[in-house]
Image (cartoon, rainbow, N blue to C red; front, side):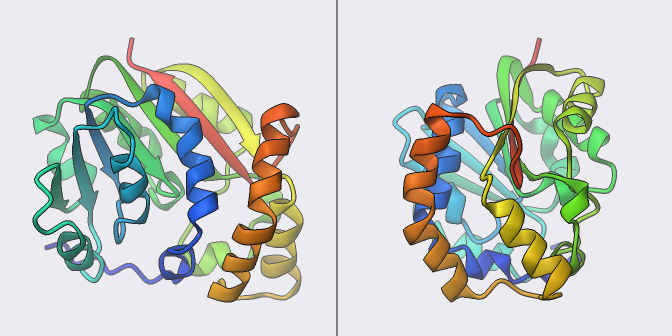
Length: 234
């Protein structure tokens, strides 16, 4: 067990955001393969999305939180497709051979993010994929980012730069969730909130995400509160 305990509340608040995670999953699915490593798997919310893909036969779920890993382990107890590993990617990457490494809302928590991406590359087979989902726009960094222990929010260029510096070939870096800019700015910079209410997350997931995901698939936004990045190991 690590001595790290996850202090943020967004894992619980977003646990029921099924439309939101399905939207992210749609970005990743073409790039998955039989063996997927999910780093920072939390309590297993996005892991469930990955396991619903017919492409995924084996999931290695890595989680360092002393308070969250037991929940992850319990969630997948008895599922032969899942191996839950306690710790950080740095503890395990040398023994992994993944077709894809997935990290959803993880990279912003990593101080040495280039080293993390190099470890992810080492854990991936040649031609394998890196699938990232991160918060965007440093200008909207606020109290929520501080409480959730985010080191940074990314721009398209800063995310591309660190991925390429780690030796990956970038295929795509794109913004998503345009209305989320105003929502996050209001919550973190104006109202100075320190948590995401589960009711707010459910409302956004139910009434905004379904039409927004369809709209942005037709008209990609020039900017958004999040970034999706897809890269390949040369």
